[in-house]
Structure formats: structure tokens, C-alpha cells
Amino acid sequence: MGYRQLRAYNYKQTIKEKQQIRQLQQKPLIDETQSKIDDNGNDPFPRNWMEDYEFYEGSENEIHPPYGTADSSIPASTVPCSGCGANLHCARTNLPGFIPVEIFKGRTVKELQSIICQRCHFLKQYNIALDIEITPESYVETISRIKDEYALAIVMVDLLDFPCSIWPGISDVLGHKRPLFVVGNKVDLLPRDHNNYLDHVKSCLKDQMLQCGLDSLNIKHISLISAKTGYGIEELITQLHKVWGYKGNVYLVGCTNVGKSSLFNILLNSDYCRPEATDLVRRATTCPWPGTTLQLLKFPIFRPSDIRIFQRYRRLTAERKLKQTEKSLPRHKKYKAPDIKAARLVGTIGRTFINKEEDIDAFAMSSGTQPITTLNEMSQRYREAKWCYDTPGVMHPEQFTELLTSKELQQLTPHDMIVPRAVRLKPGMSLFLAGLARLDFINCKYVDIDWVKVFVFSSMQLPLVIAQTENSEQLYKEYLGTEILGLPNGDEARLARWPGLQCKNEDIHLVGKYKDAISSEIVLSSAGWIGLRVPYASDCKFKAWTPHARGIYVRTPPLVPYVDRLVGKRIRNSFAYNLRQPFVFRK
Image (cartoon, rainbow, N blue to C red; front, side, top):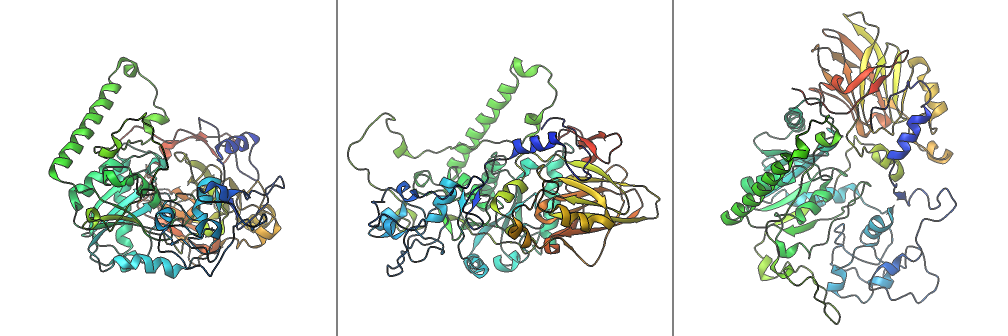
């Protein structure tokens, strides 16, 4: 990102910022429920997609529906899709687990175990999200099966969206005596405001879990990981072996899009899975679109005996020494200014045990048709096995991601370490975070001030706009759907369905408690959060706005208390501050 300057966001962005934002954009998902025609007038739906399946032998009709043909007269199978867990069938195109009758009919159980449903196939191959019918009750019914089972629950939380990614009724579904591992994902995207910031994040996460009704005695361990970079995964596996061992099954639970399926796939290729089962279990579907896992997926857990734990410890120690040796080489001894690579949290996931069947000649060739190999959980080898399950996610009632298209979700989600943006806000002024959230500064008591310093934590693709509060409603109506407010975007029909911004009845009062740090943060649901440098011993009044007033929380203590270290000097004749690198190496 560099040291790019943040220009004043009054009513528009500079051309330079727009170009940098476009460079950050990745290939977006195509939401099949929103549009079937792209901007060039082309249909993104691949007409020959069924040819991707090995068992497709062609259709009797030259012209068939783009989704494939459905046949409700053929009974559904009991074979789950290896991508989302829904049972495969060809009855209805809008139900989970559908595959066309051209592929489904005549397939054996082993053949069905080797393929995925149409929805997972489109997500993986074409980045297209198909609309299907899923009821919230089915989620709860699926997860409630573990309530009376002696098992460990790994509760995953999105650190960029909590407490909105902590399901409020999770303690009732899991049981009040359930042993828990709390895992905070996407820690690599948090800015580093001091050297011990990870311990502070753990403390904040634990406080939020206790506020959601969980018992501290049930929380056996708290881990911070990145399912994207691999940071913290090996330590999590070590703690699972040490604390839980082989006492029972393990369930990955949490709200939608917190990274459960990504962690499931990583554990599947680690020491936590039996070596011989790694290649027999298909990977879960991972995608920014919420709710990609619909039923339970699982793999057998590797029993952590003493000798196996010792061998794993020896491998980890050797890898750690190798990294230290590389850092001590002459090319690393020269002083270099800290860069983003030094601050980024990255980890490696290795394998201590390898399946003996894999130890064959890599250049050997075989003739004839290869048999389909799948995991038979009813075999003698797996009858007494313990399993790790990937469960479907539940949409938090305080999230508004279901209001956005898949392309907008890509813009909403940060892809690199968050760079805090700072502006000055005077009483009677409002700050828009794209068209998704708004913060009004009403007044300040006890201390006479002209402004407060506001820090915004969000994707850099969400523009900031400052306006007078009395003109904010008119500004929102006029610039909604334009480049000035950014998200949401689309045609008139799309914007007509947008609910706008609403606020809660009560105002937000923040009291300044510290002179060198912020006291609280205001969470704005899935859009991000705002830190406020309220003057010491003052009482400032704010009002926050989001769609349907969802996800507005005051987070105390703040997640990034020393954020002021991460911004530059104020731009002359502007409300904005210069950007800096999102990390410091200070106590």
C-alpha cells in the first residue's frame, strides 16, 4: 500500500486513490441470483459446464436447460456432497445437493462419492454463486445433534467482525457444560499497534465470549490463527492433542463466513488427520459467499500417542531451528527498515506422518482404469475412530452481508493488513463509511473541544465522506449508488431494494479514560469499526447508523488501543491524516 496520502473526503475521492483501489480489487464472484448478463452483454453462465464431470456422457436432447435437467421421479441418494455435505439428488435445481439427471442417473455409490454437487462445482470452477433454498431451522437442527454428545466444540470467530460473528444463542445449542476451544480467525489482517497486541486481542476475545453467555471454566484454550497464511495452526493442533487428545469428536462451529471450511481443509492436510484418510476425504468448499457448508463434513482424527507426539515435537523443533539459522545468515544481519513482511503473521503447516501407500515410485505408470477410492467409515479401521466435523454456519441477526451481492462482498472484505484511516470530526458533522454506515458527532460535555480524532478500520475500497449532519440525509439520497459512496451499487431496481441507514433510539456516550490511547470502539456490523480519541475526562455523544440498525456495538476495551501510532501527520487544510504502515515495533 505504501505511504499513500489520504486526501480529504468531502464529496469525492481523488483519481489517484481510485486507481489504487482498482488495483486492490480481485476477481469478483458472479452472483447468479442478481444478474445473468455481465457489463459486456455476455452470459457468464457456462453452457457446457456438465462436460467438467467425468461421468457425463452427453444429453439425449441437444438443447437442455443451463442448470441441467431435473427428474423428481428418481429417489435421492444417501451419499453426501463432499463439498458442502448435502445429500446428492436430481429432484429440484434449487435444493442443496442437486446434480443434473444426466450425471446422477445410473451412478454407483462409489461414483457419487467422488463428485460434488452443482452448487459447489460452480463455486470452485466458475466463481458463480447459485441461489438455493435453505431455512434457518435446518442449520439449528443440524448443529443441535451435538448437544447431548460428549465432544469438543471449536468456536470460530471472525476478528474483523465481532461480536457480530459470535452467535448469540451458541451456548444454548452447544450446552452449558460443553468444553470449548475459542479460535479467532483473520488475525493476520489486524494492525499491530504494539508488541504485545496478540495478548491484548486474546483478552478482548475472551471478554466478548463471556458477555455472550459462555462460562470461563468451559473455555479450555484461546487461539489466534490465520486460515489464509497458516499462522497459529500448528500451535492449535498441539493444544488439541495436549488438552483434548482422543476423548471424543470435535466440531467446528460458528457463524457464516468465519473460516470454518478453510480451517477444516487445513486440518485435513495436517497431523490432526489420519495419514491414510487425507487423500480419501474431499475438501470442503471455501468461498467468500456466506453459507457454503450446508451439512456435516468430517475426517478421522489421528490418535495422539506418546511416541507420535514426540515425533511431531521433534519435527517442529527442527523446523524452528532451521528458521533461526536462516535469519542468522549474513544477508539477514544487515539492518533493514521494518517492512510489511516483518509484521505479517505467517505460518507453515507440515506433516510428521505420511501414508505408506504414498511412498511409491513417482515415475511409475499403470495401465487400465484406476479404481475409485473413497473412505469407508464403516470399515473395521474407522469403527472406533473419533471425527472432526465441519458444521454449517448460522447467519448472525446483526450482520447485513445477505443484503450485498457477491461482488460487493469482495469489496467489503479486506485482503491485506488493515490500514487505519484517521480524520477530524467536529460537533455537528457526520462521517459516512461508503453507503453502509454513518457516524454522527453530536456534542461533547465537560471539555470544550473543536474536534475529535476518528480512526476507521475497514477495507480500503470503502470510501470516507464527511458532511454536515443536517445535510447528510440529502447527501445520502443524492450520491447512493455512485462512486462517491461506493457500496452499494447497481441499477435503479437494485438501489430501490436497499433499506438505507437506520439508527437506534439511544445515543452513544463515550467517556475519555486515557491520555495516550483510545477508550472505546464503535462496531458497525460487517462494514468495520471506528475508534475514537475522546479527550480525557470528557463525555462525547455520538449516533451510529447501519442498514436496519444492525450490528451497532460499543467495544470496551478497544481492539487496537494505540492506533494513533499507526497514522501520519494531518494533511494541511484538510480533515484527513496521512496514511502509514499498519504496524509498529514498540511496547
